[in-house]
Length: 190
Image (cartoon, rainbow, N blue to C red; front, side, top):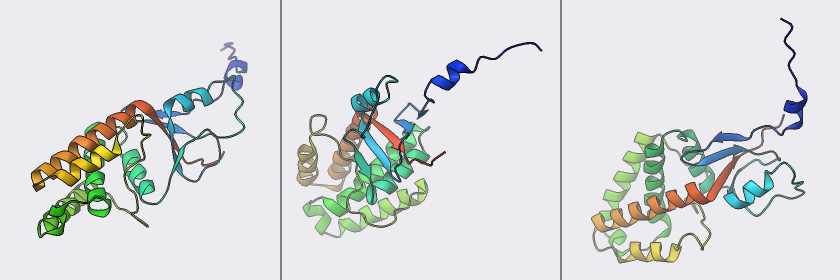
């Protein structure tokens, strides 16, 4: 009954912002932002050191448009790595239909890809709203060669090769995003 709880130490430490650390790291933003933020892990760790007084947010990607829907789907499945990987593969297929060039996609085989995308979209319960200009996350060029990925898609001669190129590419992107980036959730005040 006579136990004294020391609150001084708890009041001086900044609140823990970690929401989840695996497979991707999600944190609460301590600044006002209506969007999810994608930031290099090194910049995020430096920014969150207690002794650092940050007056501006370090360089980051503000996830808007198509990437806003992508990050919402990834966040919803943040505790299920396999589901997140499958979701990112679906995003890669969607990106292929919107932004990539391959002669196969100018034939009737495009219908098969549409059916696959819509079936996966339904199974994973993913919905995009607004513009779909960009659905894959931007990855700094020192970590990922986007031109090589686009080239592998362009060179695919069959649907099977195309699906494999997208799967390999999205798996590699997923791993890089896991290792090199932190995602901050929108600031909700308080």
